[in-house]
View 1 (spheres, rainbow, N blue to C red):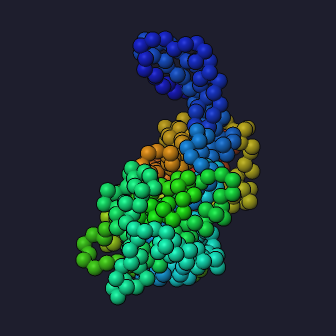
View 2: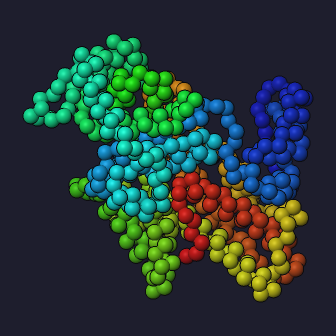
View 3: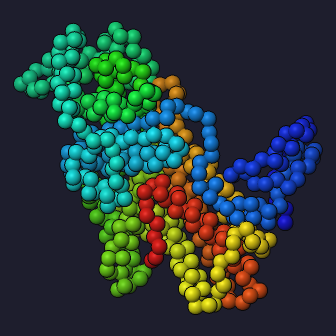
Length: 494
């Protein structure tokens, strides 16, 4: 069967361009069988079995992002601003948790893109560290050094002695606070204020502010030896104005930092619907976990107990929370309905639904391997020896063309962020992986429910079964690779 794609145009396409198109061998681009000049433009014909063969015989190239033009420095320091002042789990708000998840995800996708990524700050609270570990986040970051106190002290001296416009705030009301006229000083030192809030001016600087800047200063000193870097502040929308002040203050106190690119990625608010009381991160986690447990007991009965099920419930809870907080653009508001049951496997847009389909794939391959050990099915042949002409279902082409071949593009999009753009704010496609996983899971579920992949153990059916299983191997690899970008451990059983 041939697949046709039509390119618009009023004039003939040059022959050398057609030749280049037909000879391209790049992940994400299908092999072209024939190009025909037509009145409407260029008609591209694809040989479907050949496309399946070329992609599925070795799909590992599709696990990596597409190569892109350089979009900034190779070293990126991700400053998760809410963690800078988080001294207990009680102070970690839902909007803060969203910022942490965004920073953790960006660290993964930027690393995959080839960037050197460093996370700051080191966690100040063991309780927060343990909480994040329940969500699959191991906060790997630069460690505070004993010389931090010396840096903070030097900043205080600089503010008091070297900036004549700084003023002491009333010590009876705010002890240890130094007032700085940021706008006046920025203009005096010819600092560009494009992109900053026009109201950035007087800044009462306290000890925590100076520690925040000291950690950033140490991170730059420890990571940047000969090249420049980008410092990306991941900040909740409630604190973005304060972070702009810190950005400017750092530049004023350390002139060499003016050569460092500072950008701000804003995490939108998290609103809990139908509730007048604030919900803590721990309450949110415990509620989602109890809902996952309740839903699993209703579906699987009394078998839901023991260590393996504890791990399953934890994985489902982590996935549910991450998809809720990350599946929409980072600058948009998240509306949480804590009583909503859409977080279960019945809700096709939930993380639990994605995990459920991971488990279905794992169970299918376990069934195949058990059948092989019992002699019902033969061993899996080499992928290059399979007959892919038996893959005639439209759902099979959909999984290949829209997901396996498009995965490199999704990875590239998720890491796309221009650090060289004017102004201080940047946006990133942090929702891309979640949306991709949901869409893939929906189309896989439709296909899985319609097609019996593991057929009867009859020799004349093995050819099609092996081709389908190879397609499912690729789908499973894509699912697992995408979940890794979110630090979600895929389910292997349910």
